[in-house]
Amino acid sequence: MPADRTSSVGADDRGGADAAPVLVERDGGVLVVTLNRPDKLNSFNEAMHAGLRKALDAAESDPDIRCLLITGAGRGFCAGQDLGDRVTAPGDAPPDLTRTIEANYNPLLRRLKALPKPVVCAVNGVAAGAGANIALACDIVLAAHSAKFIQAFSKIGLVPDSGGTWSLPRLVGLARAKALAMLATPVPAEQAESWGMIWKAVPDAELMAEARRLAGELAAAPTFGLGLVKQALEASSENDLDTQLDLERDFQGLAGRSPDYAEGVSAFMGKRAPSFTGRPPAGSTSGDDA
Ligand code: T3D
Image 1: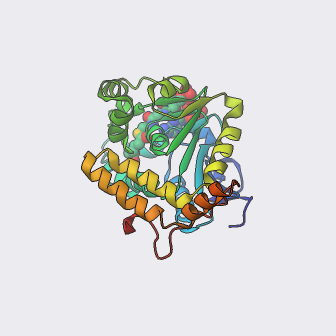
Image 2 (image 1 turned 30 degrees about the vertical axis):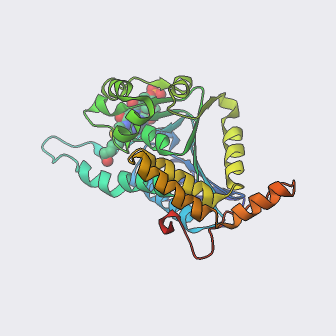
């Protein structure tokens, strides 16, 4: 896809009810992905999942995409599953949620976590249900002051999914996680920041400019090294210190063979700005080689 242009994924591009459920734009090294079902608060249907899968394919395969930025169109970020697709008539079998989680939400979460590039989320409005937990799965989360995070699941008899039962206790502690999951209490953006759920709450009018600036900065950074940082920090919640020290040793060995490390040292010693390519060391693709 050429740089600096918008395209749409997942449906046709006629606007209104038939508008593409996911918009994709290249902004230099940043892939900006906008969830685009604003009249349903960007809740997920099958087409939006498909559009997001396609955007992730591009983010994974194109080495010139060095940061992913996810946001939502309109006044909401994402209200989770489109419940209009889950309505059943009396006597019908209930929907098979095991299948939909396995087919759609779990692969999405795994891919966001495994992507060896930074993922920035700009939460422009309410993030509810799976929408909240997808936002919280991103690496750096900015939220507009008017945004809020709601574990809406308990209101309809469901369990937090999209990694919520894993990420919430790690982000805010078990006491808050249980209350948020059982009561579905909205957490406003500034409270989310003060609790450590997200990186930063910013004024609404500044959200997208700040998110693009941040994503641009990350896209110019040593991408291969950032991928290792992400992998090491994600692994830390499962590892003991000895295992984590070994991982740091191996990752540092790998990062030390990357062209960006040589460039970083050379630029520092030459008192000039570095120019990073983001590429892995010759013969290596990811931290799995460590
Ligand atoms: O099913 C599976 O595959 C399993 C996986 C499940 C994952 C999940 O995410 S389960 C949780 C699903 N989400 C929810 O339960 C949230 C439902 N929405 C809300 O509670 C509220 O809409 C919000 C708190 C998010 C926002 O409230 P508010 O007052 O700002 O807006 P609103 O008026 O409720 O919504 C605006 C419109 O969006 C409205 O449509 P209308 O009346 O203007 O035509 C509303 O129906 C629609 N909308 C909002 N959320 C959803 C939705 N339509 C379908 N599905 C939604 N989730």
